[in-house]
Image (cartoon, rainbow, N blue to C red; front, side, top):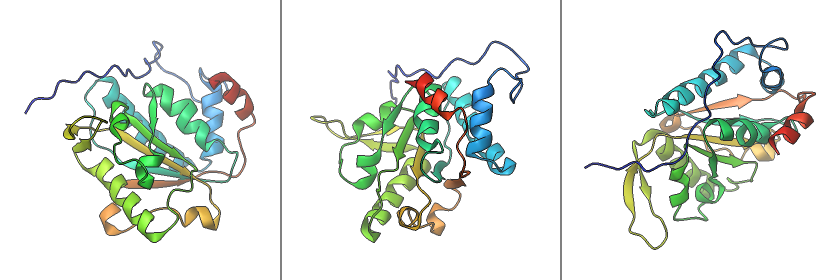
Length: 212
């Protein structure tokens, strides 16, 4: 079976310069500062940037491969949504809001697979054991299956190759953390959980204005 790819989504073009420098004296001081505050522990930050780099390089080459989904947990106002909507979305040529799909309120979800990035931001999705189990199965299917069931409205459902990425953000209070899917062995190796820092980047407000 052959599938014609008619996607018009295009990742952001890479910089032409070589030898880009990280930090305040480099070519992207805001991005550097933002991530040093968002993920202050270097090991976590390097793991996250490796996840982004792996996804971006393959998307840019139009040879996407499977990868992990990620959860980013932290206090309000540190830039979790800024990260997914203001940085990752432009980087990957746009994103789709997967909250209703993961919550079981959208049985179609056809528009999700037009994007490389599916996100869900602080929506209180997984509020009971049944919903958590359903969300866990959907996330597992998104990150582990090479084909997804696509059901656009007024059309017959079909299976389509999709190798995108899933990003879910949540606050870090007990109620919010209890909303995460249970980390069972079936999800092992399929998702990564990142804990943000508690202090926002000083330039975060400027970054939000830049995105808007």
